Image 1 (spheres, rainbow, N blue to C red):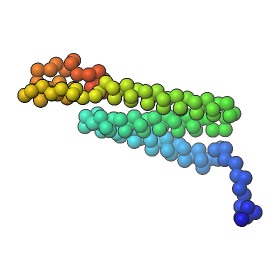
Image 2 (tube, rainbow, N blue to C red; image 1 turned 30 degrees about the horizontal axis):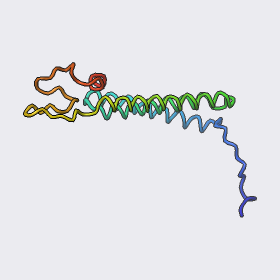
Image 3 (cartoon, rainbow, N blue to C red; image 1 turned 90 degrees about the horizontal axis):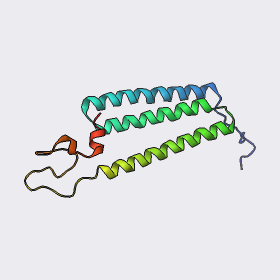
Image 4 (cartoon, one colour; image 1 turned 30 degrees about the vertical axis):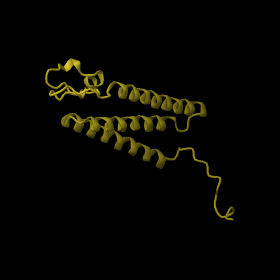
Length: 138
C-alpha cells in the first residue's frame, strides 16, 4: 500500500543523544520520586508509600542498567535482560513469601479484639507479631 513512501527499515540502536537524554531524565524523575515517597512513607508510617517508593527504586535501577548496556554487544544486552528478569522473579517470590507470613489469624479472641496478627492488641507482646510485621516497620 504505502511501502515506497516511508523508510520502514529504520534500525533503533538507542545510541542517539536524544534517547540517552530522555533515559537520564526518566532515571532522575524515578530517583526523585523514590526519595520523596520513601521519606513520606517513613514520616507518615505508610507501608503503601514505602512499597511504591521501592517500585520507583526498581524502575530507576532498570533504566540505569538499560542506559549502560545501550550500544554494547548483544551478549551484554542479553545478560542485562536476564539480570532484570531474575530480579523480578526474586521480588515475586519475596512477595509471595511475605503474603504467606502476613495472612491474618482466622480466630478472634472473645472480647479482646486482637484477632488480627498485624497488631499486638491487649495482652499480646510486640515479639508475638508475625515476622513480616516486624521487618516491615523500618
